[in-house]
Every structure is written in C-alpha cells, then in structure tokens.
Amino acid sequence: MTVNVGLIGCGGISNPHLRGYLDIPDQAKVTAVADVVEANARTRAEQVGGAKIFSDYRDLIASGGVDAVDICLPHHLHADAIIAAAEAGKHILCEKPLCITTEEAEKITKVVQDNGVTLMCAHNQLFMPPVAKARELIQSGALGKVFELRTTDSFFNRGLNSDMGWRGNLETAGGGELIDTGYHPTYLLLHLATAEPAEVVAMTSRHRLPMEGEDSAQVLVRFADGSVGTIVTSWAYVPSSNTEKFSVVAEKGTLWSDGRTLHHRTVEGVLTTTEFPEVDAFSAEIADFIGCVTEGRRPINTEVEGVHVLKVILGAYASVREKRIITLADL
Image 1 (cartoon, rainbow, N blue to C red):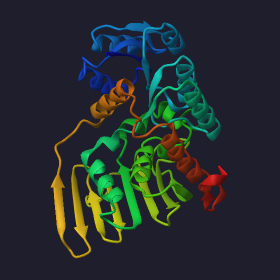
Image 2 (image 1 turned 135 degrees about the horizontal axis):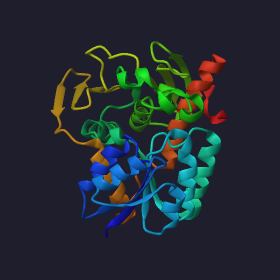
Image 3 (image 1 turned 90 degrees about the vertical axis):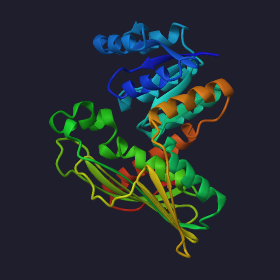
Image 4 (image 1 turned 45 degrees about the vertical axis):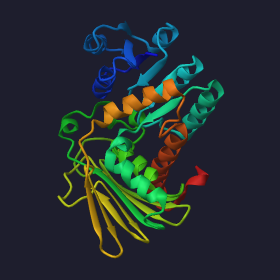
C-alpha cells in the first residue's frame, strides 16, 4: 500500500518532512500540497516531482485524493486543520505544538476518537537513538526509581533576530520560545519520565529577541511519582559546552546524552558509553507515521501525549502570570 499524503503548509519546516517522504517512495507519496502563498506550494510540488496544488487546505482534504495529511502550518492554525482532516477520515501528522489552548485540545481529542483516525504528533527528537535506549533502560527498571530528569534545547536564533514574523506574535504563536523550540525538551522530558506530570512552576525571560513572548524559559515539573524534571530552553544564547541534551538521576545510576552518545553510570561507578549512528530524525518520524497508518500501530505520541505536553507549557505560562505553582489537573 502506498499512502497518498497531502502537505498542508509549505513553509520552511515542510522541507525536512518532504525529504522523509522522498526516502520511502514505495510506501508514501505527496500527491497534493496546500499553501496560501502560491510560490511556496509550487516549490514543494516540484520537489516531489509534481503534486496537485491548492490554495485552501479544505479543498485539498475534500478532493478525495489523499489518505493522510501532514500539517506544517503556523501554530494557531493547527486545531482547525486537524479537525477538518479528522472529520474527513484522514490520518494526521501534525507539527508541534498540537494546538495552543486546552479548549482546542478537547475538541481535537473528541474528533480524533469519534472518527477513528490516527493522529501522530511530530515529535521528531524522540527518534534519536539515545532517546530510545534511555527510555528502554528507564522502563526496564535498570535505573530503579527516577529522582530527577533534565532536558535542554537552546541556541541563538539569529534568523529570527531581525524578523520574528508570526512567531513573534502571542496570538499566532500561542506564546514565545517555550511553545516553539521549547516544545522539544518538554515532550522529551515527558517521554523519559515514569509518571504523568502533576505540577509546574516556571520563569521566562526576554533576553535579546524583539518578540511579544519570551525568548528563554526555565520550567520545573513535578511528576505524580514524586520525580522532578527541569526544562531549559532558549533562542537567546548558545549554551555552555558541557550542557547535555538530557540527563536522568535515579536510584541505581545516572544517564546523560548529547543527543548522539549515551552514557550510563551505575552507583558502583561502572560507566558504559554507547555511540549511535547519526539518524535523520525527521525521516525516521515520517517513516514511522506511514508505518502506523499502514500497519494500524499506535504512534509513539498521539493526541494523548500531545495534550500532556501542551498542558505543561500552558501551566508554565500560568505560573509566570500568577507567580505560583500550577496544578495541571486544574487546567
């Protein structure tokens, strides 16, 4: 079975998605693209050797020519596109964030379940090999009880320093850096944790970028089992050279990784270092999405996990506004 995919949104993030489909031509083909900017749509159509072009994604969905859609729109447009696709019975891969409000999240959850479609959150960093191995070790009990976790994703976003576009606007982005790049270390933290997130407290900053929201954030998350996670993320600076991608401190040992190599040290001091081959996380994500659609598998992160990630971020924003710890069950 070859899955016909409709690409909704043809901006910059859609390019690595297209590469993923081109890597598996026997399994999937982008047969339609939609964007309000015709030049962007034409560029993407040419990249895949020709695809039908639409200016309105609703027309793409209604055309009946696709089995699934890949949503690469600005944040505030995600919910409506997901709902339209699910109501038409299309499977969905959606770039982060899932949506930008809890009300949208509730509607998405209902429409996906009511229509029996597969929704996969495009959490590409979960496909980095060290992440999969770390989760395996944690879930197996090899580390014992997890005490603390930390995830980071920071860099100086020079490209946005002069023109923030829709990302610099709170209404269209849903926040600042935390709900954008900060989404990555948030879903990574929750993926490695051994329980659901329960409480959040945060501090945000605007160090150097001309935007309405924050360009940096630090978030603490307490999980239901008592473990505590830390998220550090920024568009304002390059972190120090000893900053890890993720780390875990637990009863029987520790883990840490730069995203390519995984280090595991037991409490007895035995260190195991595993180097993994480089993987294109976007291509791996696309291949897994198509596999889920054709094989009926559950994606690593569905709307269920997507809602948890969103609530941590919205809880962080509430914490900053109200200057207190936020209980996520209250959101």
